[in-house]
Length: 333
Image (cartoon, rainbow, N blue to C red; front, side, top):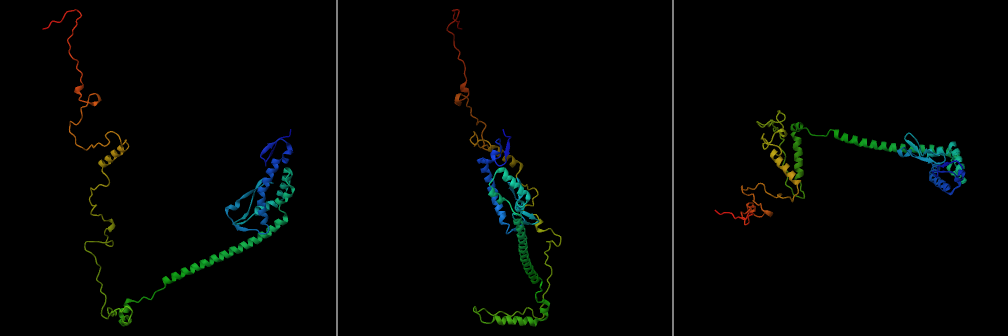
């Protein structure tokens, strides 16, 4: 009897020696396993002529299972913040260790010979992939430079608009000085007369002419009345209590209680106890606040509570005996 051997593809132990690899079940499992790995190898072969370089993301850490070597292989090749798609799988397929493992796997499992070349990468193809990877890195750097230039242009535009807004705010505006206006009343008069003349021109609404503004004539000056302080009422500048700290007159009483009293609390507690009792119990709707006399209690005491209790007394009747054992009758007095 042949020694037991375990088949990793079929996941079972067989005792038929090398004859298991020729069985129909083993060949079917081998075909399924190779077809599962073949799409990933074909996608890696497409990257030989045009390598794709992308920014690194955690999804690029994925691994694939190499059926020939029996180990996990990184699918992509990452360095820093850049990732070359399918670079790790191509590097593994072009290694001499993978070539030796593939030859041994094909010999042990008796796979189809024409499919072995699909799972191998020649050194010439790997060298071509390196050249395309360099071109991909250069194109990626050019794209990154263009993106950086666009971002810099946007930043400069935003900064320029911000400086324009700041300049417009900080730029001194031509505001007439009231002192200069009072010293030169002629200019104000001229302006007021121009306003009056323009207002007197005919319009569609036929508005009345505006009166001349002569309140800034020579000799008229503004007078400072003084601080208007109400006597007896302070403000925050004089150290008085702020209005929001004053107590209202409605709530000025000290004895006013906040919240329910202790008696109301006990009543509410009793109500909560009564809510837990069944609502159809005897006496649930009885008004305990009604006034009753001392003789309100009924005196039902007979059978089925019918009649008075004194009517249910039992008193034995007194009877005269008619027969005596000695035959003599009692003497009547």
